[in-house]
Amino acid sequence: MKICIDPGHGGYDPGAVNHNVGVTEKALALKIAALLGGELASRGYDVFFTRELDTFIPLGFRTKIANNEKADLFISIHLNAAADPAAQGIETWYYEGSRESERLAAIVQRELKDQFLAKNRGIKATRGFYVLKHTAMPAILVETGFITNDHDIAYLVNKVHQKEIATAISNAVDEFVGTA
Image 1 (cartoon, one colour):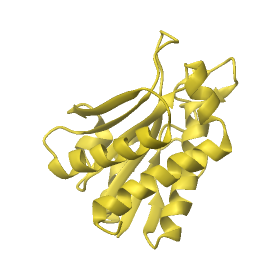
Image 2: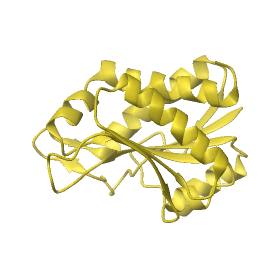
Image 3: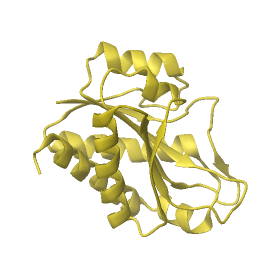
Image 4: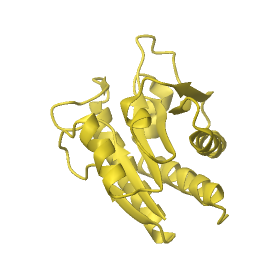
């Protein structure tokens, strides 16, 4: 099974930023994605990335990479942000109407909420996320927490917790493909 991992943002696009802690979404997404890739590869999956360095990859090229490589799953890693610093929690997005993407999102969300003691914001359907709309395989976008929330960011910058996130998503992939 081929899995495309898409670390959000990159290069000149930092994504969300927490100036108090001094971290960017692009950097944390890349770290979590690398751990996820390593965990999935150790379980026998064929893993590839839309980016492995701090480079900007246009959305259209991200989906082209996944589609051209004939990925079986697409997992985009992000961090959420809000003007209200009290906003927190995890959520997983899927393309509205894609039953397999919805099923994967539900399993990932359950595994993450069990691992990450944060507010469960649930799974959410969208028709607006380019990378979910233009991929030809089950695809999800995981918001691993709020970079703008003190509780979430303390969790997200911790390497042990980053590994836990990678393990939770990997466990969900195992369940989704029926190897768990």
